[in-house]
Length: 68
Image (cartoon, rainbow, N blue to C red; front, side, top):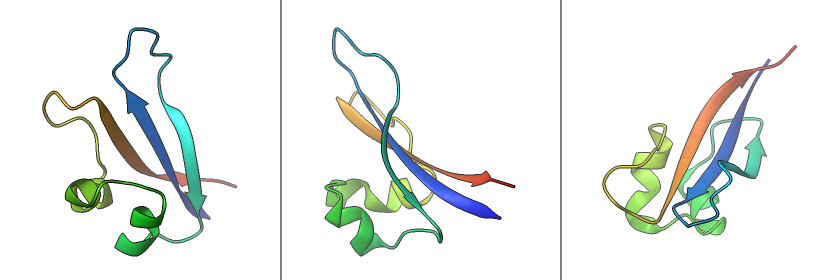
């Protein structure tokens, strides 16, 4: 079985790494990500896996994970 895990990272002085946002049974839709406050201009990038693009202060990762 596979699930989708959404995390975020914030570029701040006391950054501790990735932060859990949500888990999905199926790949989330654009509307689902928007409801979790993923910025509209980043949704397509996040649906393709996400990650930091330039020098933004916050970015998201969407990863498919195998679970048994």
